[in-house]
Length: 326
Image (cartoon, rainbow, N blue to C red; front, side, top):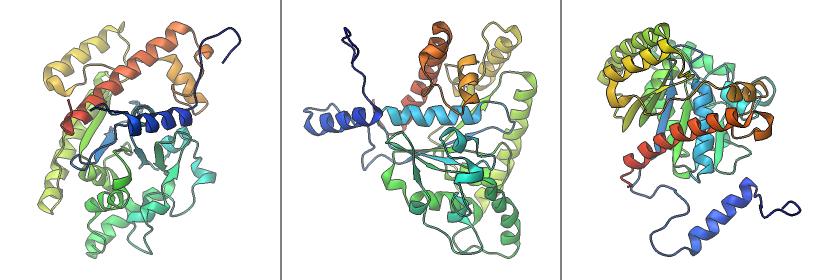
């Protein structure tokens, strides 16, 4: 506490400890820890887009951190071989992540599969854990066609492997956030089959929306094939998130209006604004929740945080709705 100031700051660890103590000693129906109950199923949210540059990884990182800071137990899974999510969480794929230390270690066809409990890592936020990514994830794309031809289904067909791996640790979490690769391959299809909800990020420009349409058409056809083989895709919700939005850009505003007229309530009410604060934070592999406010113009920082809180708050409401909470 600064001299002459009544303001006291707390670390994340102290906040979580206070939340736990208040939850234990609290009376009535108020809950200080929002952990899911036995009748509330694990929420697995796949964040995806077919085209790079839509803010997919930034969205996944901020959503995972937001939910963890709110007291939920969150597992983030980096399914992208580029491993940008891992880097944002301080896991450098080239030096910190070895062979078999991604989810591939738990879903591989050849060799001994690892238990997910041995792969999950902690982060600097107590309630947030991560399964990092690196280039070895591409091996799943290469091995799956051969396994299908040779009928290697030990451990389940490809579309059931990620959900099976998550089930090994699912009881320890409330929400799983999967950052999917920016292409439609076996990893993405597996994530879609494991998901209970899907969040599709869209940059509001014509080429990006056209790319998304192609992605959805191809995905629908492939999921029909997977369904015939026994895969299931029953989602609690699916939403489109408009990202990198500039309200003063006329063509972007027109495109957002077009999306809302076509997809209706499936487009989240709040868009994520394009912000130099988020871009500058990313240069040092940080999120908006980690940088100091004084690094930016106050208005720039506050507008970005407000947009972020609105988007993530809307997604949190969808999660609560899926659990039957008011």
